[in-house]
Length: 202
Image (cartoon, rainbow, N blue to C red; front, side):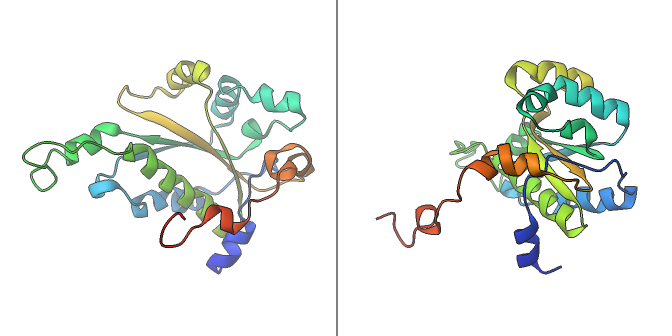
């Protein structure tokens, strides 16, 4: 598939058919993490792929799926064939930037932004595009702050791994609810001139 076609097809999907995704397809999608950019090649991104139905349902409940259902969406988190929990390990970045070729006068840099989160976002984008390339649909949701502890316990995450977002993967179903209720369906895309500037801001 041409990249321009992948971009045209990339959208948030909140309805899935109950058809499983073959393991080799999921492995190709998850394998894109090895091509994701990371500051200093720190490679701090981590993925947790969940396909087991009971665990998917438990994660959906822990992540407040009922919030979406109450708004009129189908139970799209628990219905997705796979959930990809996009995580990051901040310590990988500090470990890398304390090495001699990355220190400044022997000291780790002052991080201008938390690149462990920026790089996790880049890895997530590759997953979303890879899903489209495989003929699948995908959506994204975040874990509410008040639910984070319960989700971490459910997933048995070590203390040094942070959740950034979760991606739903599956075969798309009829999704008119998203067109009617979601921000995508109720807000226009901003014009390119508002989003992109050239040479300087003014």
